[in-house]
Image (cartoon, rainbow, N blue to C red; front, top):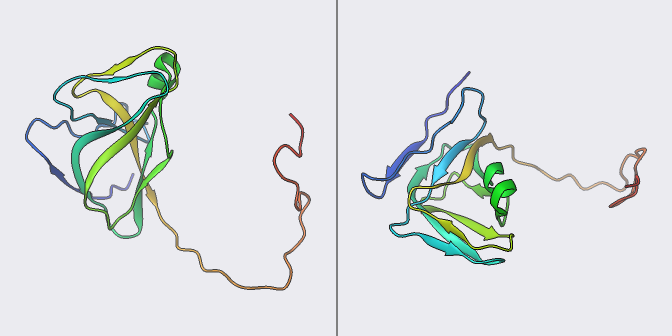
Length: 147
């Protein structure tokens, strides 16, 4: 498997690096960088710091995705998902979490809060045409195929 080098700067030496948790994992778990627990009340959202700064090679992005375990067990997920970290962004990586459960959830320091997935980026170019080729679906929209 080919590897892409991503330059990473840590805010301090205690920051945990993103980590693939299994050999076949597509996403790296990323950890919170909070010094005290953060309480998320039901339907509350918060911007959670990671203390990480990345230099992603041109032609790539990193997608930020929710952790399935947090979602199913605690109702914690992400807004703006998947989030995109562009190759020219150099600020701190922060994760927008929301609590969709009826219970408070505490985000402890250095807790795994999301996944980072490296993706190749293709640039689109639009071509103006008078008509589009017809398809079986054509203009069928949301729910047009049934339940």
